[in-house]
Length: 213
Image 1 (cartoon, rainbow, N blue to C red):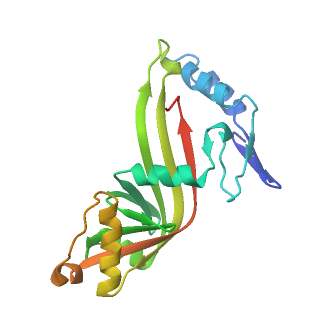
Image 2 (cartoon, rainbow, N blue to C red):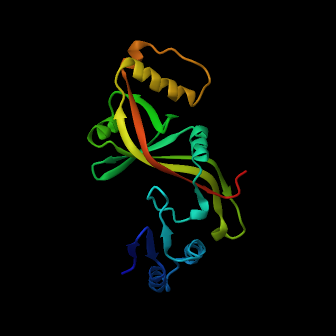
Image 3 (cartoon, helix red, strand yellow):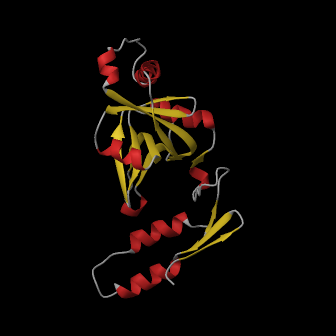
């Protein structure tokens, strides 16, 4: 078996090295270069195979990069301009970038009243989401040592449609507060013809890489 994964209490052990050895044998006579991939792999797996769960039950292989402070995780969300929302379209993933608002462990989005994402969410309201900020490449002389500075948040939740004029206006206020300190009035006809989506977050994790000030 090239890849073996098994669960032991709250840990997952994964063995990859035999697969790399096999691939190197297969491509030994070709021009395919795997050394960079192997170098990166061996650097990441200094303690091979042991991948702990965090307190939410989500695997975070690189625990040295995990952000566990909820205040810092929320700060990443508050500094983000775009939320990438992932949905399940039958047996395929579907992801879109959206403007958003965040308050009290809940995300808010607005949309036209028809379209692919609306159709998907009506069938399946399970979603995931991603934010990232402070992205910058880390350069090096050796291509295998290049990397990326970033801070990111990934999470999961359930999406629901917001009903009622007052509730929709409140959702729009939260979205606008992400981008502006001003207050706004919303025409009833515009609000009526706009769909608002509320994502109740079930859990989320933060991650960072590189020397970020």
